[in-house]
Length: 241
Image (cartoon, rainbow, N blue to C red; front, side, top):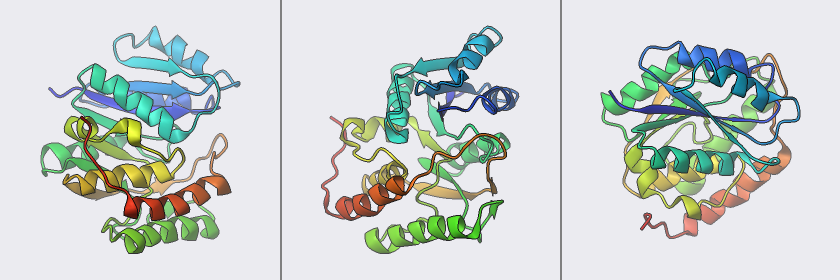
């Protein structure tokens, strides 16, 4: 059986973290979880540690000091996974905006349908977003449209944070060269994978806005993504050595 790791970055997710861990670990298929906590003052890491006694072989924790950015959290997790020989590595939010029951569908897109990277896509089959304000939906949808036009990148949801990577993708991308730290990181990783010749498949999912905790989105995150996309068009992308 393939080794599977779900990476969940956290900052102040004490309302959600216990429930999301138990939901993922209840799935068939022996999924494991790595929580990357950026010094949450609300005690998120403490909850994870208490659950490690229940799931000692399947729940892992990396604690970092301070908010260092979503992208750096995932890069830390990717390197951790590669060092421990995981075959498939997932990105997923802690707040149930991504349904854990969709993880096997993302995996199947890689193991059965031939994709190297699969995306839980909000926009490949209409607009499947629940409980977001209209302005937020339009901002997100238009951001992905902007990426398609600016980069000629034929992916409907390039900013999606619900992703399954095969090991060979993460081994090939030069993770130390990834520049963007916010949600632009999601675009950079997908675009880099495509430029390096990997196959990407979008899997339609329903995205449900969080009901507990606070969103970490900010205007600065979108600004980085906007200007960073323009820079990607002119970057020479090389595989890791």
